[in-house]
Image (cartoon, rainbow, N blue to C red; front, side, top):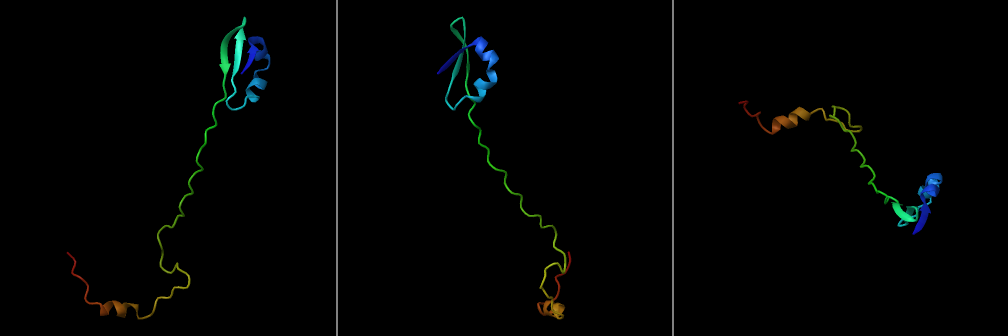
Length: 87
């Protein structure tokens, strides 16, 4: 534990703060009595931001490369049966 007078702390506060190591405490005294302590703040660990999912949007007809729709596409649908009645 380091001890400095209030006059020393005033003149070299920046050096005191930047010289602190984790767990180290600096006591400031006035008239040989402790009046304050400087304690380093523990490092805060933050999680990295999560990556955003890709924006897919609404698929458009013909947007898939290499996909070919056969000419008899509607014929296959007609073989499945009649359309259901609308309510």
